[in-house]
Length: 439
Image 1: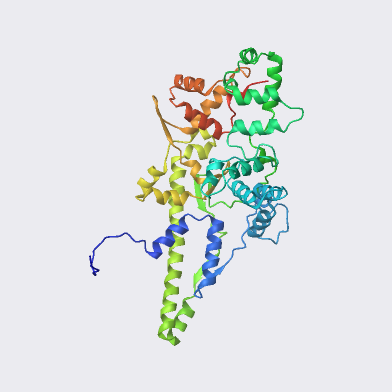
Image 2: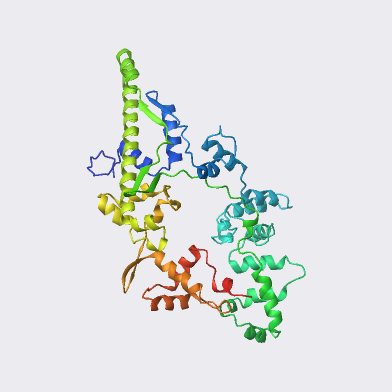
């Protein structure tokens, strides 16, 4: 078989630079867009950009963004100082790990495991399998895991909630052997609460069982929360919706963005005296500047269209502030009305916040998934409202299970799966049956 040159025709989709930049700008928050504009101005001699010194007079904004600091500092300064002073629990664990006497290979393996812990200090993937691809001695993964689980706080490095609780119990003095046995062998009794039956099975008294359960309930399901500092979120609204005499009005909060303009006068003068290579360079930079200015304009237009649409669709909420009144309205619905792709709406909504008369919220909050019921479509907020209603009326000694909530909502004409109920409950910070049961 020989070599040959062959011509081949093919159709490919290629995103033009201007379109790519427009899509990029769309998903930026105000703070990100501000930094992006200033960066582009540094690269382009034809772009003049000046950071805005606009600061709203509202005391709420000042207290939220400047934290009673020096008024001469910018929002960026405050954010940078806050981030610089925050700490990450992974770094603390690495420091503590290197105080242990481990060989070089085991230390490196344990460092890798720490990097794979999630925000709660758990492993999402099996830690032994994470290390198996490195050709290590079979004993090393287990030794590395043991080293990580020996670090403080107790419970870090667990693979499951049960293991997290067990790791904490094993550190306790005096030893809690009954509690350890309940968690390792009979954790299913936490769902039923049949402590008398458990006492009979373990050949002990119900009083001792209740005491052991009390110890277990006093432990933390997320131990790293005690050592992890979370930097405050400083957010500038992208758009504001206000009540007015005529109803509702909305406006873009673009006062924070740098003032940007094309230096047309210098461009023309440079072009007259430049050689061919310089003229090519100047034309490229002018084209880039035009793309950026046009992209910012399109971003503003899209945000205004989306906000006006949300203001109309969720008018009752913006007038009353009751989340239960939010109507089902999805990004797909918005995309169809704007005659754009759903991904365009998703990008436009990303990292955006709306200032309302009732507080500041992510824009995506106002896109509400519809849940079909025998009474038609309702919003997920209405489902959550009914869950809270029934939980507020339960017997704390015998709280409703998720399956019971499914039945109660079904009687209300709202049909949801048990998994959906659990998802809504957890998202609103409502504990499980065990967590809600009175001791």
